[in-house]
Amino acid sequence: MAARETLARYAARILSARDEALESVCKDAGARRELLRRGRGPHGSLRVAPPLLRAFLADHPATGVRLVTAGDPGLLRDARAGILDVILMSLPVNDSELVEEPLWSYEMVLIFPPTAKRGGRKPSLASLGPEPFIPYRRTVVIDSAFRRLCADLGFEPNAVMENDEPDSIRELVKLGLGVSFLPRWSAGEDVRRGTVQVLRPLRPQVYNYGQLHRRADFEPAVLSGLRTVAHAWRKWWPLAPYVNPPLG
Image (cartoon, rainbow, N blue to C red; front, top):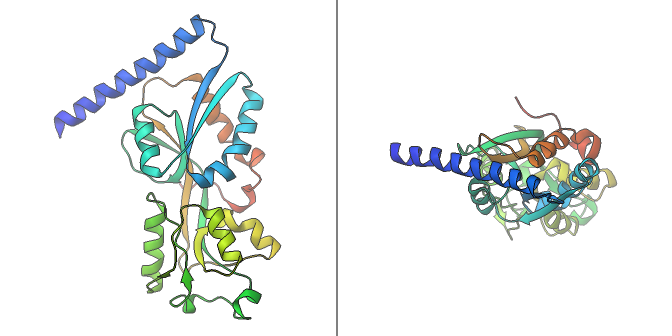
């Protein structure tokens, strides 16, 4: 274990030196564009990345962007290796090689079809057992949140399908095909329109959402710029009313 930790420290120094050297060479060569390499899951790809990048590029118009959408393990692996500069993800991840930077906190809620699609039946926590359930599957944070919900409510979900894309799940719920457990900000606009109903668990389940980047001595200017813009999310994110400042 000691040898592995020593090797990891040296690897981090090498990657940091590589980043610093590349940035210096690009500046000396008069490169026209810096490149931001950003990773995120499907949800962040649709709901967070577009307004964030619009705000970022307004301040840094000469920056090129490479976007990668993948599963959580692949994103974390590429961030550790320096293939990605930064990733968007639910937190905590608890990875010693990565720096976690919470942006906001959100609550996980149960979403149901409109009452009309349920034969006039109102949703209730007591009736969850036989409900057709559509679990939102993400290996980091979300899966453990769902297990905690099941334990708190003492029910075994009647899973009819699995999905890793909240916007797809929400559409399935709106059609009356099942119920699910999603971030409140994912369903907020549909609740306002009356196309889904929401119930909060007996014990609120609140998590942070934010950025992760590789722990290193050197930070590229493009990453510093993105971090500054990201923390101003109240200004650029349309769904800001459905989240809160990050948990301590």
